[in-house]
Image (tube, rainbow over all chains, first blue to last red):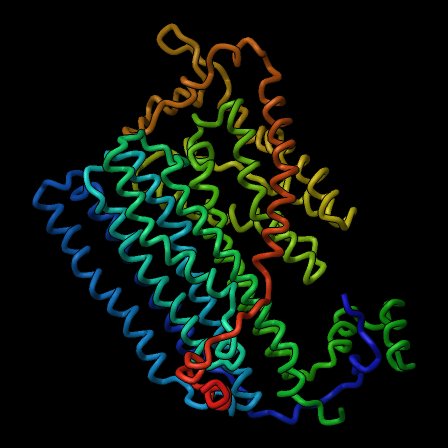
Length: 259
Length: 283
């Protein structure tokens, strides 16, 4: 641990020379509000049609209510994932090294907002709908891989967190010098790990289809999700990288007048 | 350290200056910089709560979830053993991160609180409102008491090894007694069709889960019954032993996963992403 020296300490009251620095929270607020609305709507849909139309996949009503939702949301959500990345790439900074410290600081804040929204989407899949999935499958016998809980948990929640996980990665790589010049190892883990939950569904559904185990949620069949979920811990490394740079940028951007 | 600094710090120590003012002054940041520093802190706090509510809940759910979800799975053999062993992993990693970088002995409590927050939302939202189970059947266990002790032990010893040995053990050993007040009423024996069952069993019989085994009837058998009332303490003891190693392993996983390492990027990728000078150098 390094210790503070007298050079690091400025006890006199200082004033800003950069009063123009501002942040916009509009897109952050919009993302959080829209996502909350979407997740709540999914839960209401489950409440309305889970028991009434979700118990037997061979019934026509299951096709109307659940398979229709599945086939509509799949291209819409995965399309939005792709569009987000394309937009971020084509609006990238073409001369990333020329940005001023103010702009860099601003982008670090927006990058942190991307991460906050990413963690918000991670909460809904890791906790809220994941436990709903356990609850549903321990209660209702599964006769299809596309059950009312899976339609939401896997085929809606996963693309939504991919949108913000990969989006945050592309944002950082195309707008922040340190994340363009180097590849943040922990950011790779934090995005790729949860992303791999999607292909891990193959193992999960394969096991459920052929092993006919009783629905024990802590069954080894589910441990792939666990190990991939551990990668969320790597976001701590990304936050440490941001903190480390902010420590340098804040005193530069907000220069004390009498320093 | 200059005279002004010393006077200021001495004033703070004497209570003449508010401690918060001293910290802000020592940071050397202007008021506007402090404002944005606070904004950043709020964003980080929000990210930590949501990330670990999701990540820890998913982890516990898929490794020991059945024991935590259902009252009639809270047996004396595996519940006091598996649940704390699984629950200590993320708190140990969080302890490592908070302590190593910020000297904050709060990691385990933060982790435990995030889990409780997540579980407190999802149990009613899923089990009560979707499939109509009574909340009694799906009461979660809590680990906040053990987590506070774990953090206090880190604060006292200031050392990962001793925290693992004493704190890890205490975390598991306290799990059963700290949850006993919640679950004791459900261990009361009742007579059901001429056979003895627990109240937890009875609630489970009334609310069958079609796809789930009737666990406690399977597990409460043979030698476990003849071992008398010490079975749960033996499980807690064994859980404590495993938690020592689990805490130590996850402490270092926490350190590894908070690494600030950047790998060098490919020059062509950098040029594609917007770097000009390095692209020329690499071309």
